[in-house]
Every structure is written in C-alpha cells, then in structure tokens.
Length: 274
Image 1 (cartoon, rainbow, N blue to C red):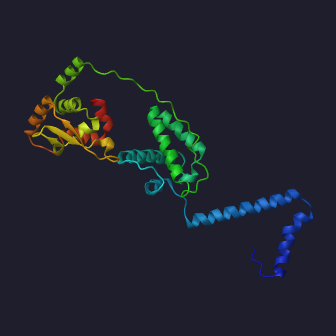
Image 2: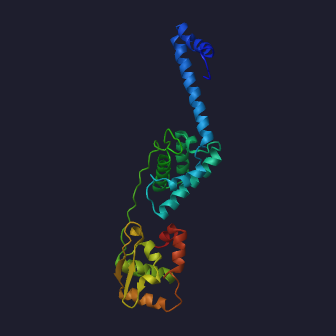
Image 3: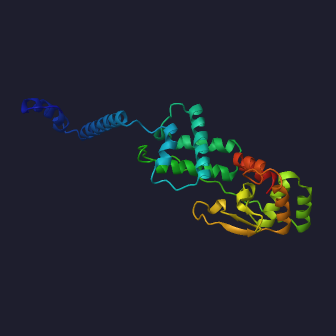
C-alpha cells in the first residue's frame, strides 16, 4: 500500500474496514474481487511488458525448439509448417487483431475448421490440419501462457478408405508395354523390386551394382529410425533395362526427371503412376 508508518496506515485501514463496519457482506466480497482482478490485470500487463506474448509468426520457431514436441521427420515437419502458414494467413485476413497464440479462442478454431471444410479438403487432410494445430498449442502451452487449448473441442472427421483391386497380370503387361521413357523404367523398378514409390522414384545409381546384379538401399520409411540397407537381387528384365540406361550419361538418380518431380510434389507422381 506504500504506508511507511502507523499514521499513514490508519486511513487506509479505515477505508478497508468500512464495508465491514457497515456489515455489508456483498460489498466486502465485491471489494476483494475488484482488488484481485485489478492486481491480476496489473501482473499480466507487467508480464507482457517483460515477455511479450508468443505470436503466431514466432510459433514455428518455438515449436521446433520445444523439447516436448514429437520427434518428427523432415517431411512431416514440412507439412506441419505448411499447416501453420495456412492458418496464419487465414487468421491475418479474418481476425487481424488475433496475432498471439493466446488470442485464438475456441470460436476462432471452430471457424477455421469450417473454413477447411469449405475448401473441400478430404477428411484425412482436414484431420491432419486440426491434429497439428492442437499439437502445436499443447506443446507451446507454457511459453504461450495458454489457459485453454482452443482445438481440443474440434472433432475429427471419419475417414472412409477407398479399396483398390490389384491389377491382373495381363493388365500389368499392358500398362508396362504402353509406358515410355522414365515412366516405363519407374514401373519396372517398382514391379521387379517391390520398392515403394518414393524409393523407386529416387533410386540412385550408387545404389545399383550392375556387376553383382543387386540393389542396396536404405528405405525412406525406416531411414531415420533404423538406417539398415536392404539388398534386392536384380531381375533379368530389370537388369537389361538398367544396363541400357547406364550406357548413356549418368546423373545422380536413375530417373532424374521423376526424382525432381517427386521432391517437388509427391502427390503429382503418385497420381500419375502408383
């Protein structure tokens, strides 16, 4: 209160005790409530001046540095950053005053979920966006000084799987016979090795031993957790195709155009092949 002696304190004490002297219990409670709220607001203001609220723009850097976040791979992190950028752009256009994580309310989260639906996102993509935003706010709860996670109330959508039948031998032969250029070799690599699309599209010449006729590669799926290479014998038909390709000028990748396209857009390669 700033009182230095009894004489200064007595007027303050009388003021504080006035509600009690009047016997007004409601006034006492309101007085205490007002003082608590005033002090809380003052402390919050001081804290904001000392440590500004964590903004949406700074959230990505904070998330990557957070020790309590999941250990995600480069591709997953790239996707996560894209989700946050999309949300930040939408938030700046629709709620320009909400620039800190703690400014995002459950109502704003619900509005953004509706925006994702209106964009025509699949249930899987919608769930990925919402999952990451819930994860982001949970990981940054303490540095962002959050009291609630606005994304916890957003329900996920049911994902309906579309079954695909396997091609018959005749259909496979027809597809491979009609393919040309890198697509023909890509299909052959997938057919004769069983490699996933990403591994087939980014196969390197350094991983192919034409002398001993085998492929030795660490699959992308296990590269981070278990970087153990697998050895795949070369089928005679695939060996012949690779030997013909090796006769020309070699780049790093066996399929340089496909590898570049895959690095730029995995979905584009997937739609056109697998």
